[in-house]
Each structure stands twice: as C-alpha cells, then as structure tokens.
Length: 95
Image 1 (cartoon, rainbow, N blue to C red):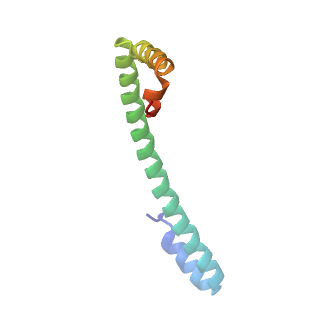
Image 2 (cartoon, helix red, strand yellow):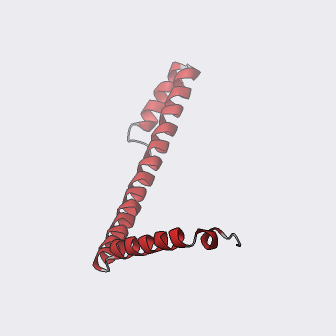
C-alpha cells in the first residue's frame, strides 16, 4: 500500500518531532487508501451498470419484436371503451 520512500518519510517525520506532521502524513495515507477503495468500487459498479444496460437493451429489442407497445395501447384503448360503457361496474358500484 505504501510507496518505497515510506520508511524514509516516517523517519524524517519522527526526527522533526512534530506530532502534527506525523498525524497529517497518517491522515494522507488513510485517505489515499480510502480513495483507492472507492475507485475500485466505482469500477465494479460501472461494470454492473453496463451489464444491466445490456440486459435492458435485450429486453427492449424483444418487446419491439413482439409489438408490445402496440398491443398494450390496443388493450388500453379497449379498457377505456369498457370503462366508458359500464363505469359503475369498473368502479365497483352496484346499481
């Protein structure tokens, strides 16, 4: 996780005797590790997102081939006609 000069940096920071420098170096290293972890997770999520998008595209193509939108619209139009003719039945009201 560290770089080749990490032991030298640690020795120099210790020699300075300034605890705030040591703390800041530690904070930097922790944040670097967290950034690396987040970057790896983003790469994972981008791949998963790509997989989902590819599956959606396949689904869209199959629906297009089956004329799903046309069939749904025809069914919806038929349902509207039914609702207009018998609104009490559709709404559950008894006459």
